[in-house]
Image 1 (cartoon, helix red, strand yellow):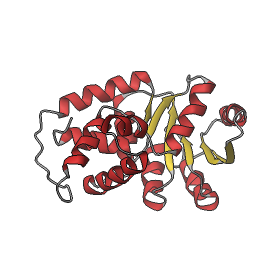
Image 2: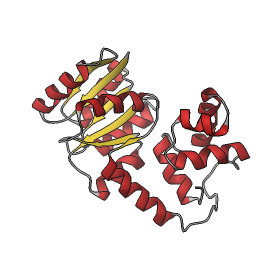
Image 3: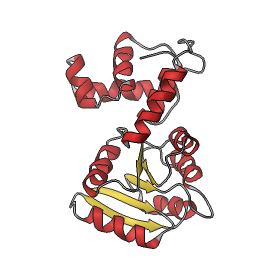
Length: 214
């Protein structure tokens, strides 16, 4: 069972999300919140696997809430669900630790699938958002692998995993490409996140491209 918290300041939209998620018996909405502060309290109380986080909310916006949540509960995955695809919102949310970013016009089936993907700690991006991320990564690629701020060098196998991670490959795809088990891939990714000093695969991809990998 994947435990989900919904954080959005529009009550009607929260009700709609609950209805969409309830179609999947593996998803359980444990709390609904109208702002970031309420979301942090709900996460502390209910220990969800995934938070569906709006960005533009009163009291505390979704970016600040995401940043604080990832400090307090690193294993809780944040999936941004918003009407905004502007670059500033997008990259702030990803830097804060969001594992995914979808627009509110996403289909119900796509949203349910995204929650499952996020619960596994894997990245999920709206197609229009993915295009912007790739464009930004290309811009950052001009920087060489200086390694500043990275804890220790990568092993050759970690570099292989990292390059595939940057391309958006899932654990299953990395496993097939490198002929290793998914458990081994997960272990490599854990080490990579630690060395890059990040908390999500999306952040790792961004940081890795800044360092010239991929």
